[in-house]
Length: 144
Image (cartoon, rainbow, N blue to C red):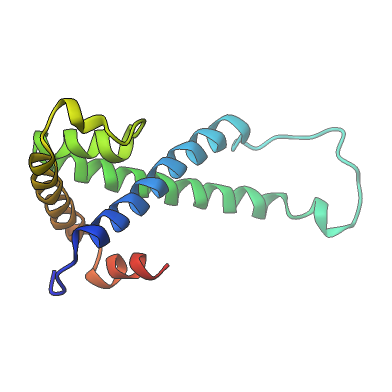
């Protein structure tokens, strides 16, 4: 990146990406379980001329587009995971994906090793994500 980011800024960006990633996974699960995308004939539909009954197709199309967008985002993050080293992925998995306890690293690393590995993992993640997103898109996450 042209603009050197601090560790705190990188952490904020990656945390935001993974929060969106986890929410997208939950939304995909919800959409898969609660929406039937196959055409159906509803014999009990009221023959009403109000617009609420005529927008069913639009709603299904919006939900399909939303689901496709979410699946693309999840696929992109999973593609980034395949390009990370095992040490970086393990760190990211503990720190961002399966985050249960703030001091998870105490049994594995010293404080200096934790921050050294954190720098390395976040740099590697940012390098991989730059392949898919522009620098402006990444920096926009800092402002939002």
